[in-house]
Length: 54
Image 1 (cartoon, helix red, strand yellow):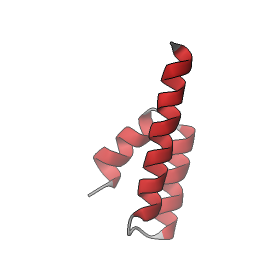
Image 2 (cartoon, rainbow, N blue to C red):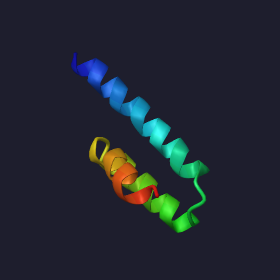
Image 3 (cartoon, one colour):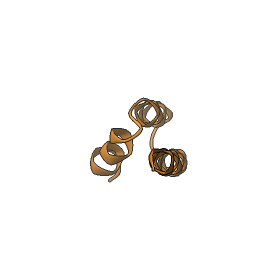
Image 4 (cartoon, helix red, strand yellow):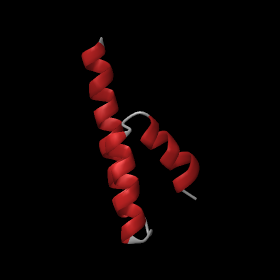
C-alpha cells in the first residue's frame, strides 16, 4: 500500500512539474515552484494549485 501511495505522489509531482514548465510564468518563478514541488512532494502541488496558479 505504501508503494502505491508513493507511486501516485511521484506521478502527481511529474504532472505538476510539467504544468509549471508549460505555464507563462517567469523562469525564476518556474524554478522556485519546481524546487517547492520536489522538496515538498505532497504539500508542493497543493500549494502550487492554491497559490501559484491563477
